[in-house]
Image (cartoon, rainbow, N blue to C red; front, side, top):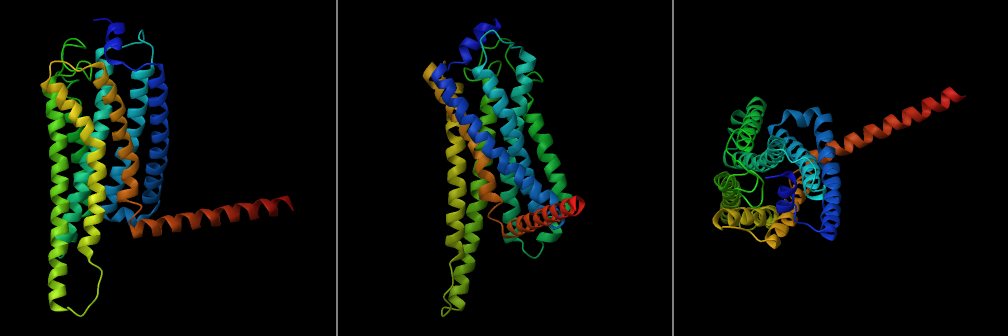
Length: 318
């Protein structure tokens, strides 16, 4: 099958839809990159934060989302907005797809690692610092990226289709079995995140109930309700951003063919994954008191540097 026919099959957007989806991607990507790079800078400049495993996991999430924003936006817009006659070589396409898949897999995997970290921090308070050390956190991060790379580049390593349209109606050269495997894997990760947060809320509720029974005279804020509201927001956004894409992937697996309307809907739903990468820092990092304190310290240091520079320039001029 020629490059032109492949592009005609998969790049289904008309000129108006191209402008719309291009605008959406660029705006979300710029915002996501700004926030995630900002988080990386704050954690990287703070020696105290770099010592704690939890902030290493947050930094890894920001790194994954930064890569996801860059790879997805460039490759997605190149594929959907470029002319039909442009190069569409199999190995090149699967390499680009693998990079995007690895970044998003690393992002979702980081959410699972952070959920597990928070679970251990509450469930095993006395032994948490012994179990979750900086060295083990770094090993977990390396293991996560190696696993994400192996999963994402399976099509490039041979689990693919001989021609661009012989299998999936959503991704050229992608095998239906691989698509089902990847979608199922992401669903399992989301379920595990849900279970981890549900256990955290249950333990907080149990703790509050015991404390209220021992000291009924104390009027105190219900921590379990606060956590339930926070985690409900986190999970709702995660589901809204990922379930539409996973739905279309599974539909592609079980049906004989998708319509052009479904292909267009999938293209627009894919931008929700990009949006998730921009929302993650707001949910997982900027809400942390220690990170906000590090941010204030960094801003104060930059102001002092600017003041010193201005004074130096003035003295030199005199």
